[in-house]
Length: 116
Image 1 (cartoon, helix red, strand yellow):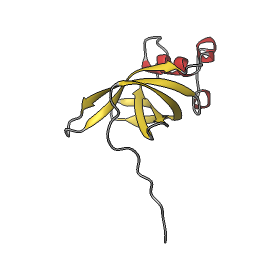
Image 2 (cartoon, helix red, strand yellow):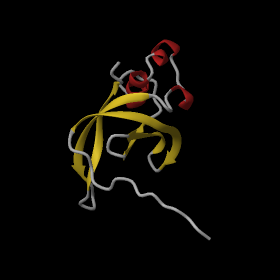
Image 3 (tube, rainbow, N blue to C red):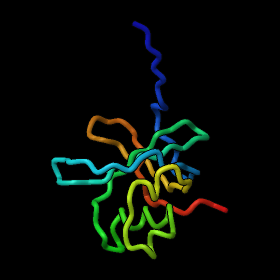
Image 4 (tube, helix red, strand yellow):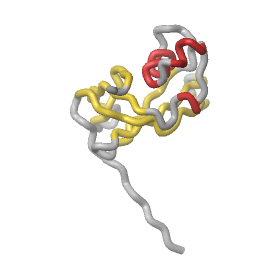
């Protein structure tokens, strides 16, 4: 039996703003309740950046802010599905934090609309 495994970028990206693409948006059951896992890719660096958001309709929630930055039509519709964001371009403002195991990881500060 043969296989081919491609490993992604291990080190975090420096703080800054990066062009990204939404790979997926899935509702996950976590120990903190249901959350949406947004998977972003920063193609220039081959980096995968995950981001968690509560599935809230409040305008200050990450799910609202992120989805409407990715697809402006969502604001008018008042709702979104994964199909409304997956495959779309955006920009990510990233920072770096140290996790409980001492590893540096990226944190999404903001999701911004893609530059035209």
